[in-house]
Length: 307
Ligand code: DON
Image 1 (cartoon, rainbow, N blue to C red):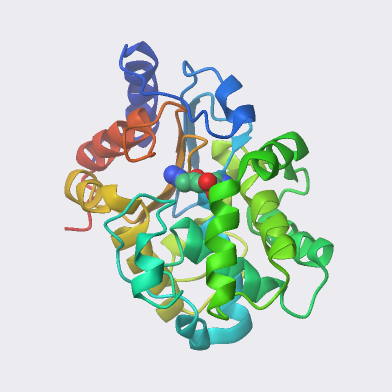
Image 2 (image 1 turned 135 degrees about the vertical axis):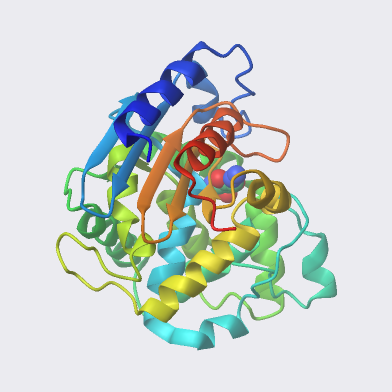
């Protein structure tokens, strides 16, 4: 078995040296300022040992990676009734697509495309003020990562709120079908802010450990979800976590994973490790270009593909 620390250090050196870095997201003005030269990786094994390299301690905007955790929270609140408000099929469409919503009566295909994540946020918001719902999401991240320093980058949230016309269109459209229950502005406000949570690769890998270990953090013994729920969240990540790049990610990497336009990817090697990578340059589908290559290399060298 190759040494994990050596493999992680080699991958970071290889990724930092590559000239092909993809393009940073520019549709959220604040994200356009991030340097595409960054690369970070953190891997936490079943014993809690951390292998990290590159910019693993640099905070970045987790964006859509937050959707794994809002899905977990919403399932905790309403259980399988959530699936009346959102589907669990891959969309085969870009993350911000609106076309399927008309045909499917305002019910988004899955919780990871923007429309689906906005519907999930609406479920978490119900019965609360926006500030309370956001506090709940942030505290959940801090609890999972065992780190109270995790925070929200207000500049990123405001930057997206100013320019998020398409998300506003998706939310209003769903509202017209009754899929959004709260005032659209409230739901969008919570959505923009949870996407603007800032974390390091190490914090993100810590936060997701329960998904690698049947719902439980093996170090603290905290049970976050049942083994069955962890398996199902991982299944949705595998099939939908990279939008219309999900098939290619499963083909190349072979691990459940969730990407964000900040360039982060969280991935799970079931029973083995919780993984976070960050490289801000994206491919055409809006997924981290070098992040995907790094995970493909890691899975291959460690023999971690689930297939
Ligand atoms: O709603 C948006 O467009 C962003 N807050 C998040 C999108 C995202 O991360 C999609 N990822 N590839």
